[in-house]
Length: 271
Image 1: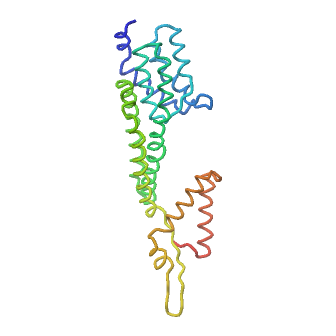
Image 2 (image 1 turned 180 degrees about the vertical axis):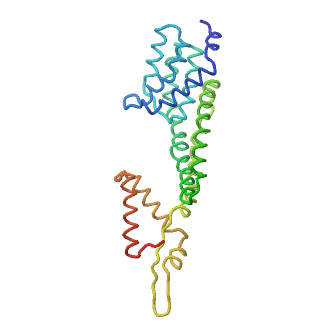
Image 3 (image 1 turned 120 degrees about the vertical axis):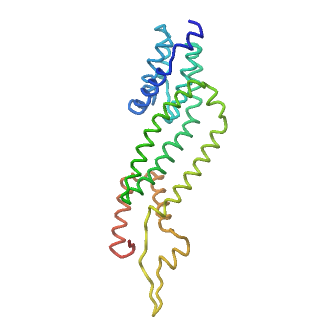
């Protein structure tokens, strides 16, 4: 089979099927030996069968993709699309190059994907949706649902981009990946920081009285130091507890609820 025939054998429909198969199995077949590799093999098996006509080549390709692989599932679409393009062009001869490419790029792309997908997106949109829900507004939930539908098709597009652009798409980014990740992190922290005083409510109703002079602690002391000081402190403490990994998220939630109830009972915290 010549190179022209190989380039024509894989259609857009094949690429789309491969992306859907991988996306639905990326976390369902995860294991601690080769991580996402079984999902990669399941997702690419049909398109690899079209590329490799010989059974020996097909088996060798599948075994190659069974090697350790782990990155953010969104970013994996770029890598796997490019991997198909490489095997489509050079056949089984590209086996080592495919593995080296996946191994070398899965770490840097995971840095970008984890920052955007697993941290910024759910934190920002989850906070906005949760705040709307507290106000009795279902718009946040609708936006969350629509975004996930949009992103599903966007992930398929990433697979197409990886296949059509091959190595150029990723290697051309080079050091820009780190700059992009850092910029996105700063933006996300800024948005989350701005949401703290809107979502986290904490108030001390205690007042000092001396003769005819009354001094509210909240408005005349804490708010003068920094508005929303207590919500910021509480957020910082919860963040440190999560980072320490000594308590689970559920334990931290019950700890905050218990602290709020006790302090409210003794009049330390108010609504």
